[in-house]
Image (tube, rainbow, N blue to C red; front, side, top):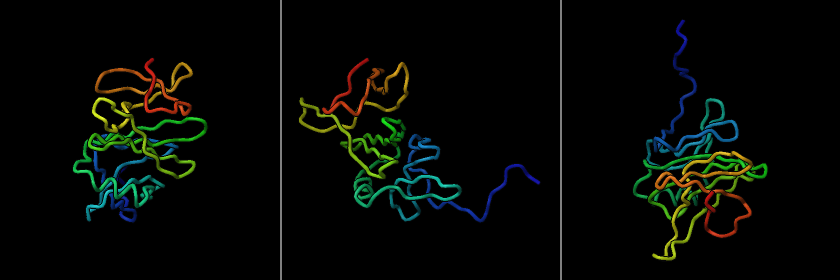
Length: 157
């Protein structure tokens, strides 16, 4: 008897579309997936099954992007809601899925110099010192985030 062996009765037919898009959120795994037919969608694990959580609108948005292999997924929890955030460098927004409401939103920041929307600077999250802290992997800055911030910026810590 082998300790690790395949379970042939439970194949998952959706691969991981980016090395950094998988993360644990609300006690399960979420990831940006792509199947053999090329369709891009966001999935979550439920036992040995992959459950689709992306809407048709989100999938359309994902399929318009040329590159998704550089996507970064991270999770956080605020005010009783667990969120899966998906940063896509080629997109103009960060896609955020609210597990409690099962709704998607697009979070972005406004670049007034170039008059364009950009994905949020945050690429990772931790809760420390009573604050939600988001790390900017491009500049090393740490930002404090809150659902009470109603503009397109995160405040620096």
